[in-house]
Image 1 (cartoon, helix red, strand yellow):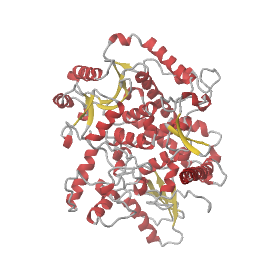
Image 2: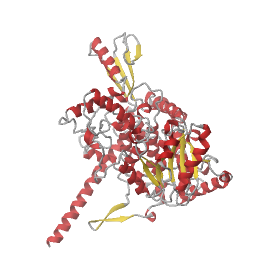
Image 3: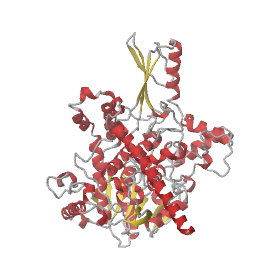
Image 4: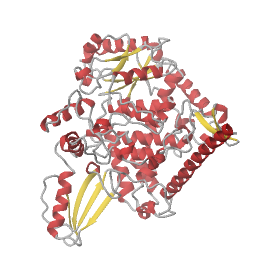
Length: 621
């Protein structure tokens, strides 16, 4: 399309390039002998292939024919791809070789990437994405949220306590470092309680691994909860949510993902159209998305309405809690619905909190722990973006590219199981390659938040949602651009559809409101006797919330009916040939929206230029 202004060209990848870490399975085929073989590393190929099929983790299928190639040449190509796409060691991934070359030749740059400059990311306005690798980043987040009774703890400096925790994290001020060291032995992985966020009313969101020491469990649990209570200005109680009990397991999510991929990739639409929706339902993918959104909304109620602190507890505290803690903060804090805020959220709750990207994304193709939790999180955020488009600064294109970037083995952001692994592996690599690190803690890999490494400034405009209404939205009056703050009364209730108070509306109470006893309340037995009234209060809170106009800079809650939880077509259908037909549906519509976004951007620039010219003429006259 020669008139298209947005080319969406990745500076690192050609149009048909596939990162080696994005390859899921390699299949060789011989048409004449009717043979096929799934190629693993260091395997022999006993027949000459006529076709190579590469199944990718992003739902893409790439096919190569060898009609014009010699048989030995075809065999070499297949074996080489199988070998390099399934490395036996982490240090064989592309990022290590690339960064090693950059450290040896700092003057030599490919695509202007410099790993030494990859420590932070700036957006168009110059804001940087905090990486939460330093004491000061955590301290700023404490001040931003007003968590006055919490402090940054450096007890894990040098990873002396736990190798799967960050060096710095936030704990209640009343807990001394000596107590933390003592308590850490009782937690699985020595993962002590981690503060995530503070509500303006003082309620805190905390993540915690299970206590493995049964004899000490009650005593330590009580002390931790008491410390969280003392950090609350009203000394409110603590709700504990057992995520392992009420949310799908990582194995169930992986099984649903496999079924979803088979449905979107392997079956032609015309053969399955009549049963397609029932097949989609049988994958359980949308059901699991609904369960995460629903559970997070319940916990939003606890913090927002009941003013109690919430503790997310799971066995190791580094899987389901990443997703739940992130979703709760997206619903409660409009900062995390901006691009920089969302990136800082992923750094804080996923990268630094020890989400196992290496194993869960299965970069080395040999993990039995693979599970697409990060994709499910992005899908849940997309559901909220779809329901409240004016509340998010970023677009669904941004979310899709972020998912793709997790499959590019250049960025250290999504390459490791924890920060300690990055330091350990890259230090060993530096020693083996005679790289002088100086005061650096391991090699500095390129950061995914430096989007200029992948896209031009023009293409990055696609990251921005043109429907977003920021805190201070520009308003053009008589040729002059003025700013004004929007309040609740500026928004129409039609933004969220028909209120559920109408019985024939979008959702029903039975579908949305949580099952009773879905939250486990610890500490005070008398609270357990109030679950009936608690459930009624929760239902009333949701009913009242949905009956009012939405505040885009306040709390947002998800619609959860069958019609409101949708399939993320841009992400899952990109590679389906039918989706790429001109004037052929959603993808083509997105292209038109891209052109419209370009035109809006041009008009904004013209208005700013007109304003500056007008003010200049006024001064001259």
